[in-house]
Length: 357
Ligand code: DP6
Image 1 (tube, rainbow, N blue to C red):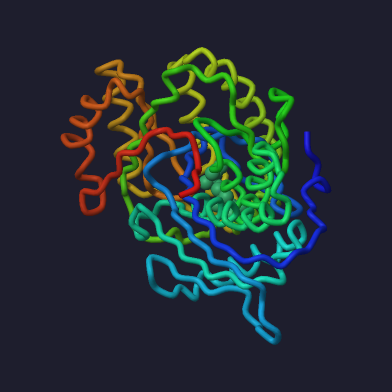
Image 2: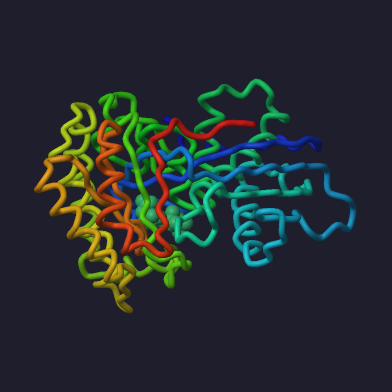
């Protein structure tokens, strides 16, 4: 297993080139909520890598000119986006410790999402992982013999420094991150692709119901911070570890009944942490609860193994096996559409991670 110092590339070389990567979003089954140090998770998490919801990033890089102050220019969906600059600056600052050559280069960054920006879908995982992969191109030019495994691990390591959940977006179909006694190769520093996955999960569906298209009112970073003083935090970290243990066998065997139990409990526990922090906050909305109740009813009536999970927002992710796609679509159109903002939902499914384009 690689430790932090193994990721430091000391060699500095001035290079010129370009790089393009697309990287998907992911949806956590066991939630990462609470961090310490430099982007290290308080508990292990595990997620399904998505396919269609992704960020496509292209960078051109060249040595920095003398007296050039800026490190980068940035376009998002073709337009300048000054509000992202702080986050990118912080990211470049953090990763320069591991690829010092970055400090001596200028980057023209062009990023776009395949999903609408105003859909309330967290884009930091796809955005930061695609950016990290593009930056890895510099390292590749400096050490062309870098192995595929080291490249992927370091890309995940760097992505984590941009956004924790981004560490889980490099590969797929299922990635874990954080120290877990259940996986010998788990690491605090990077995500690892789960090797033994029951076939049903390789084509699992995630239909995202857009309950609120606005950006969330509380940033994840603040939410993580509030875990430091949450009176239930220690128990929550224990619970996440226990759920990791239970989920291991479930993912191996394709045990959908127990999958549903753990995944829904994790979603509600995440929001319970938000509601019990100080200050407290509520991100779910009345329509989120209506959808959850409809899912309970539908599952009871049809025995279709569908469940919900939640991100740090009001939107609902419906997770279910591919063979129930038609039936679930009908259920959505009949019962759930009325709870979605502008009747919007996105059909996504599990994928195998990022790729260069
Ligand atoms: C609720 O990865 O967005 O989606 O590391 O501060 O960027 P930062 O946080 P972020 O947190 C994600 C929280 C979550 C759960 C999860 O994806 O595991």
